[in-house]
Image (cartoon, helix red, strand yellow):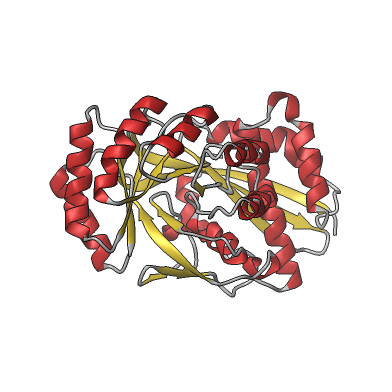
Length: 361
């Protein structure tokens, strides 16, 4: 089944409200790069990735390099295509825009394969358990304490048994006040995650990790920069709060270094930036070999399939950058659980007419 057509499109989608974390400032839009592949039999697969400000670069890389490189390739040979794409842009790649671009194509290849075989993606990838625990991954750094309390009250009332908030304020006192207020509101039985978005040094992260333990925080996410493996290992060893990391790791080798160094408690690959489904599954199996759970970052519509496929799934993040307004069937969350769909492929079927007004190219 040779690839005959590669189409790339770029959209700038408004967020439901102004979002902010400790490092990225205010966010009003996200950029989605969508890839549609077709084979000689008329089969079609769709993949996508997202960014804040780099969508044009990702789309250009697909159009200028990877798209033409795919023409005539056997769509079933996904491992071979992945390896060849990686080396085709390796010298200027090894992460960054290259990983995002490869991710979108790899997702489209797996979607094409699953649809051609007539199965949902999660079954094709292993089919462990379609029911996946979900948490609300709010981006609420700019919220006041009353706004935080109201937001999390609504999330728990809607059925979530786990929520995440942003930390990284200038003082420890302010972070603790905010986390304490949310913990008091949601009660002791709801899992509370916090995300620092790489704000601190290892020393500061250890100090805040110990203080956060008072409020029974389930995990501290991205306490420092992803380049500091040794720092993460220190935070895990010397802090009192488990560490989640991986959304900014772009190769299986980076994940391997984190796991080998005991630098992560919850492994968090993002299928849209780690190179796609092919390496995501390898990271998940590597984590299983290290007796570590896998959680996800963003794109819950895709990640529900991947988590449903593996035995060491932890939580599915329900992300603020979701595509619910633009798909035929949004992923339902019922009583804090998501169920991987039985529809063919990854089942993220876009309503192109709704996307059209937001198209940049």
